[in-house]
Length: 129
Image (cartoon, rainbow, N blue to C red; front, side):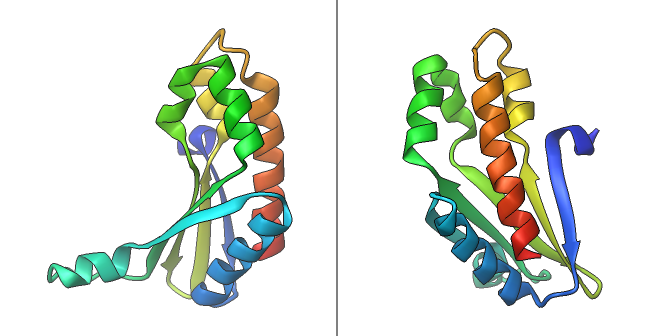
């Protein structure tokens, strides 16, 4: 089920290297990095411990504008996010698949746009891991 919603890749590269590469590759593919949430640090501030976890939010204004023109409900899924965490000695990157979002909004006309966004973000991931 998760495979339908998310695209996942594993890497032998260090966690911080993968995060930095995602940011660089996103910009190189016309996406702006809006924010990087350091979930581990946020939780530690409240006394909770966990392994590294960052959420990298990215957006391409042109794609966002087109999506909103087709269906305002697309905003529920914006911005696009990469989730980066560790599993043992691996760094794992997961992307909520834009094509899955289009499937949740049938009749919205988002299918091709979502496929294009997903294709680009998969390239960003593949170049980063």
